[in-house]
Length: 286
Image (tube, rainbow, N blue to C red):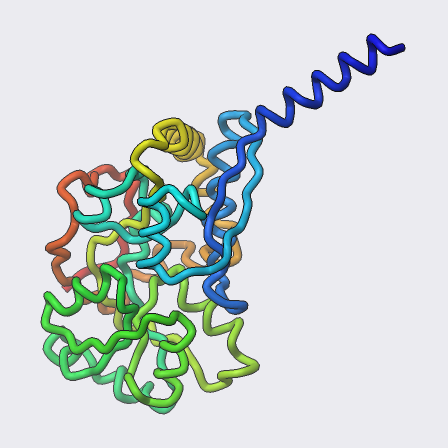
């Protein structure tokens, strides 16, 4: 009897050791509707490898602080963010775009009173006369400023929706995968918030998983697991069924939109923009 108990305890102990704990940041706010998309991708990657994991949520922190904690190897082990050259030089990175590049297709979260204003925008020149809100530490801000767009920044994610609603800026450009669920979840508190998607701002901008440079095992596991999911189609199926991305399909629904393309001078050369299994292209760009 004691022998069986000992064997059982050893098995339980081994199972516990084999389960990896991965610390990630908590939601940006109670209305952060896209947070569990990235958590689900972590789970999908490790499921493909048949490796058990436990995801532990750290308190929310602004992006700049989160990246600092990641670089210092404290508080969090993994963070998802848009890339730039500095981030890739300082951190370990999994170079697989987590929304297949769709983060770089930006629709406009606006107040309904500004719908007519945006319906008249047909070119980058007219967009440059419109004040946009963006995160203070986001690479998007640098990209938009480099293109000559008018941008005001805020360090707090939730405040940018409030700025739009109070007409302190005319729009909060959001990833095409983000905006619709973000507006929907705020309908009770901001009933006149809407997504304007007849015009789309586009730039090459992959969202990657980042970790500490020394976390080579985590980098390799995520890369291997995500590539398996891409090759067997389960990555695409995940995008097509997840509540925050399923509205993007079929992709042909975006064919008649006006897409205004700007350059991303901060995109690392390592981005595999010609790999069609990693990137999705929408519509006809101008």
